[in-house]
Length: 245
Length: 245
Image (tube, rainbow over all chains, first blue to last red; front, side):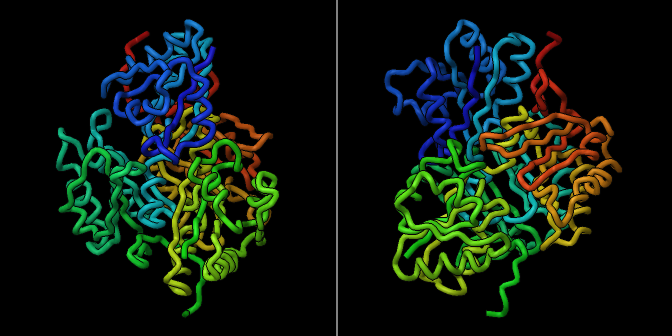
């Protein structure tokens, strides 16, 4: 018995991999958070879907495992990549506890960091850190310590979950931490609704980012000391020598 | 005039996105490093390919831009994601200098970090850093400072370019830096040849990683303080409360 934990990329459209598409084709039933299920449902009118609400992660995985245990072919879908702030870890842990005979296959996808970066230009070309600003399961002190460490060591930074209804000021608080180490003019970027028809992006300074509004579909980029704007796009040079031209 | 900078995923097989496949289908000519071109060449027997040697990155981008400027539809292919240690940044910079009228579209892909993580389990479920151990264009002191910062702030770490002919001992040196902050038993993993027919992975301790052999297709994972082994796989918990069961 097996279950596929499938990354549908940012938006569930053409940024999905062929392996992910094959897994959805092969599944008897597709399980997922309702917003992500809605992104792919139209493509599979005759497929059985089980959608569960936000923050019901444990129940979602348990439901998927129950279905797999009955011998059905199950795909648990995640936005982006299942291994980046997705369901892969929780599903493997719960499978180990509840039904060790069910094998979990993780099918990677394009994560939001990479999808948004492609729209902005090339902000993550050098060493970079991924940090979630959600303090639902991580104390804010841990998040702040990581922001400080990343800025002090001149990493590029990608911020997931910069804002939500419950924590509208987290992005501003994060910028205040970063500004202890980084210049106000540090090149930053935001990408919103990546892979959806209404996707948009903006390049701005760290001082401007502090005043900016993010929502739950926004991914935020903070450049390193070398990041610059090239033709309106955000680019972190890797270090190639290009001459004076 | 435009040029597509296309991520073919790890291995150029079924982990390629539909958008990447569409871009290759649409291209008059496909340009890339010879090893990556060889991964996809067989799928396009009637397509024109231009392959260039390793370390010829500037020339490769210039050649692609020259072809685009003649009005041909060009795809420049990169392994994994073009924005993660790939060609996207260099291509945008050179386009800006040499032919600002050529528009660069970056098509994201599954990067090695995500592809290898999926095989190992879920090592990057919490905040993580991506660090390249190549000191060709980055001083070792900068790399070492980033390793220290990442370990001290309890990030999961993914290491690209852990070894090559010119620097066989970089992985060991990196482990020595990490061991200043991390326990010898820290759960680590290695994935090799991800997406290729001979792909393999291993879960091991940081002390064992220090003695391990990596090659140019290896991606290395160092867990955070919470990372553990679940059914032989490497998993970093996100923090869900699972009860005592």
